Picture 1: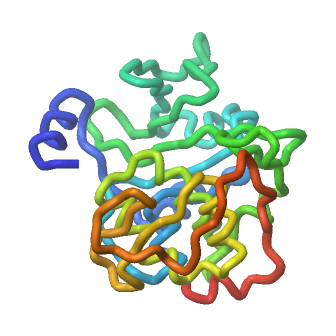
Picture 2: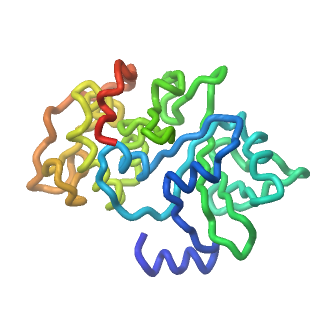
Length: 244
């Protein structure tokens, strides 16, 4: 986000304070439902390459929203955010504006926003992709735990969501994470997106993009044919997360 855009955003909606994973874990301590970090923090944890963050993207199952409200009751305010529409979650209006909306959390109106909660659908308690209704998996198959017990969304899934935005930070995350994915995960990501990313290697240069992007970059590893859907490879072991 450009500086002018960030200032305009803060004047309209209020400022954000980017929590660290450790701070978020402390804030969520006692929550009786699963949650996980997505977005840039998930890529940073996987690659070990740090970058600035504007917020903390936290996934949780939509069916656990009552538990999230209980966890913060009397301490923080939860707002349903859908597009440019904001509404506080209250006892009179406990439901979100939309099941695809986000839940923003802050202590009070004069405080910074702390958490960008990403409502995630489920099928009988199993994680369901917002992009592919056939992609259903146990939570342990699409997330991983770091040494401190913080759960993160798998990097290839994060990159798939980031591809739609194609912002500078998203291209940088792709640049540093792609070389660390095994071939099976690279293939799944390329096929799920419908094109192959181009990178200049493992060094973070914010130059990565998807095929058809900047000239002068090389196609990373291989080119894969486009398909409508492809099975998610899942996790055979935890070796792909040794870089966290």
